[in-house]
Image 1 (spheres, rainbow, N blue to C red):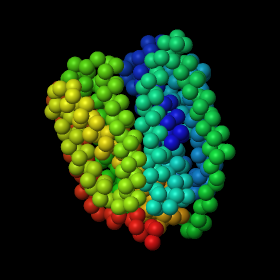
Image 2 (cartoon, rainbow, N blue to C red):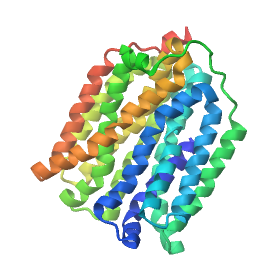
Image 3 (cartoon, rainbow, N blue to C red):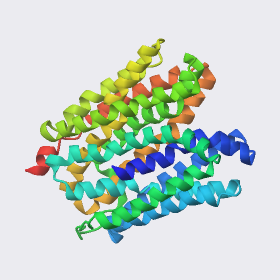
Image 4 (tube, rainbow, N blue to C red):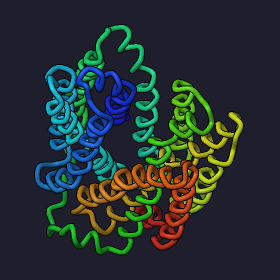
Length: 381
């Protein structure tokens, strides 16, 4: 949980400071966008290599190593980024270090937590996303105004990022990995159960990235909200998702993951479809709260636990790679969703169509989730 919180604070604090950074270096809009794009490109690119490395080096050692790399990138962004290329390099180093976290954290959970408690354990870990998102949005402005420099927030946050590597080294025990035959990535890609889970995750995260990247713009340009208020509206998702993720994660340990996920996905689609329809501030808040309760942040603990139930039973020697593949394919939606939504806005003059596409894909995710069996009971039997 603490690891996710630090990663999300590090990531979120960048967004409000991009205009300041662009002003100092005289960057164009395209160059400014490349900073975030470089972070996410290396973030995604690091997932599969980290998963494969963990099968040889060990989950704990890989987690500590990549956490240290993330801290180096964070400190370098604040202290060594003297020109545009250095900015991109440090953003990429930080992204590569952070990119392994999903795979390592949930692989360790799958190996060490029994199925009967895997949902609530994943919910606790996942709560760090909501916490970090909220803290990052809250810290960016005050730290910048207090220090008078955009560099200081990154240098300050490099300290807890380094400390997380130390904490992981001291507090987490190494997980023994079964030494059986190696499972090629291609075999995991062809596994019909994993394929459905991976594609469903892509569909779910598509809506999340659309809402996260274009939601504030939609509220500002089409609902006449100010910059601060539009950010606070987005924050509503994180606030409602945290208790929902914990509650649903615990419930999934008792009644199974599949039936809860199949209930969540149509409601997720409905909340995304309603959002561009409502005009009042109260209506927008209710739609965002509904998405928080059933959206990506609440869905994540159930989905990774469902995946974990399956791979722990049938693919135990390839847990790290399977989780890395799940994360990699789902986060690819961040590459597709935001630009496609921007294109829809250019063509139609509104972002509403982008939200409707996201809602439709959530329903596709529902259809894909009908296939895999609910393995929670099987894994404990």
